[in-house]
Image (cartoon, rainbow, N blue to C red; front, side):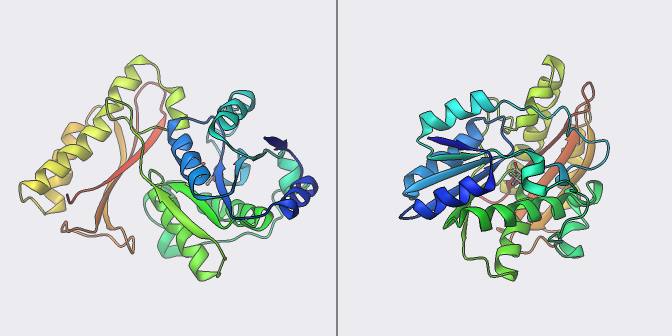
Length: 280
Ligand code: PAF
């Protein structure tokens, strides 16, 4: 496995590759969720590239850019064991030059970003799309793997690929959960013991919502009341229901409905997200 930190060398390596290439874009601090994406890519492609880059332009002022966990050595070991061929781990100046505030950006449409996570994280998805597009161009990957935990991100990237005719297949990968159902996230590292317990209300609310739907409760207002009661130990930023194909809000659950939650735990103020398809 090669660890590459500059664009010139990456381009040279890419030229030498034959067969299909899978890309797993990450910000590092790899966990079993990332490893499930990597495993799928290794299975489906001749070569797998993992990018590890804490992308500053997708963080908003006051967010956790500085404290975001950076664990390259450990990540590299995990990638090596998983059969990755190349890690691309550039510095910020390598990706963006000296002025990261003066870049050409890809800005997804207002409709897609003015809701859910985009509402509280202004500019976040511009940063995500811009770095992902750059990684697609650099790696010339045939397939790219994204987790369904970041459902709005996945939707927006799929839209970008379609709207701009990127020649790449986006492969959505299911959420990976701990045994107690907490969705895996690099940010779970911020949780102390109490936060970790509190955070379980999120998945509990979603699984209860699923149960309600099974019992025939399809009115999202009723489901929201029940979910908010379960999550009353958290600062809930949103609980919303969308059609997963369009990300339009919906008031009645059907087979396409995705329930999404963002909430902060009380102690560390860590912001967590999760989502679930409610129809069985
Ligand atoms: O999901 C993430 O970790 C990031 O948003 C991504 C896709 C690697 C872009 O920086």
